[in-house]
Image (cartoon, rainbow, N blue to C red; front, side):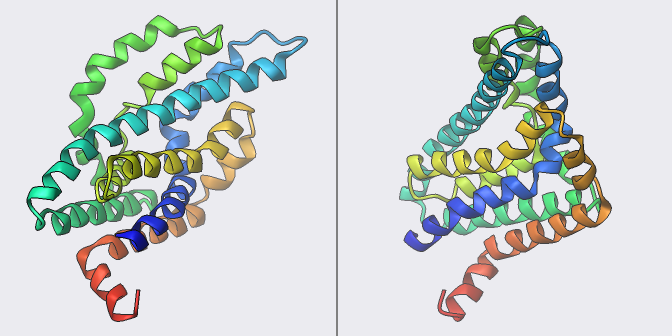
Length: 233
């Protein structure tokens, strides 16, 4: 598990970076609205930066909380049933493959998986209105903490991978690295860097991202583990 743990952090960051197009579709609008709500004037850029960092910090924090809750279940169960590991690995791999198919716009079956989190979001989404419009960093932080629970196939795919980690701490850290991978595009959207959205909206970029995510998924499956063992890791 030590090798897998070492590789998982940069891989989680890369998944977040590759999946940024999906993040822009799910969270880009609310991130951009934070800047639009601020009055233009002296100190605007500083206030804008604080708002964006607070919102995305809350968002990444919620990912970490979810991963911690899942890991508390999976790590304790894995201690009792060793056969659970291949099952978790299969789920994580399949989710990544589904996300890759969605990113490449070949098949949107991941939307059925996203419905799993709909009941939780139905409860939390009304709370987001309490922090709108956002005028202070603490409001942005609270909004991001709630927004991180928005049903998202990319997050669920990475959570499946985080569940494979040997400890609660490593699972939470995996989601931190994933969140950091999504950060550049999310910050750029907040700064109104529309050229990034245009670049990531190109079909070739989406398909390349989809292929890479599918590759991650296949490598995560138990078959991929066997192949890694056959090639000396």
